[in-house]
Length: 135
Image (cartoon, rainbow, N blue to C red; front, side, top):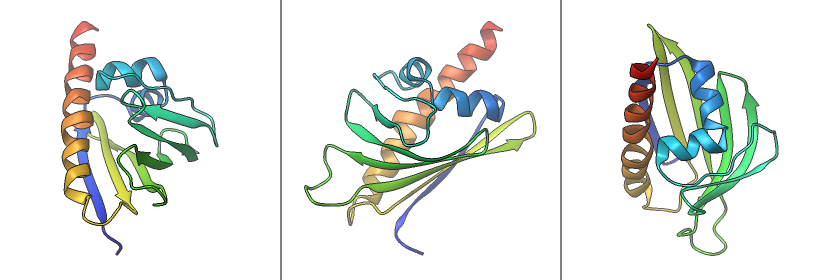
C-alpha cells in the first residue's frame, strides 16, 4: 500500500447529514471555523481553510463516498495533487467517517494526520454535538 493516512471517527448524525454538510460551503465553514467554498457537483473546484486547501470533486456517491484531488498551498511546486477519499458508513445511531488521504508529498503524512484530527474531526465533533443539543 502506498504511504498515506487513514483516520476514522464516529459522529452522532446521519450519513446524509454528514455528506451534505461536507459539500455545503456555509456548513463546511461553520464546522471547521474557516471559510470554505464547495458545491455538491462532480468536477467542481473547492477551497477550504481560507484558501489553504484546494481541489476538485472527482467522485460523488451520495451519502456514501466523496473522492477529491487535494492540495495545500504548502505543497512544493510541481508536486501533483494528493487524493482524499471520504467514506460515510452507518454506525449504530450515527455515522462512521473514514478519511483515506494518499499521494501526499513524501514525509508529510504525520503533519496532515494531525491537521485532519485538529482542524476537522475535533471541531466537527463539537459542531454536530452543539447542533444535536439544539434540536
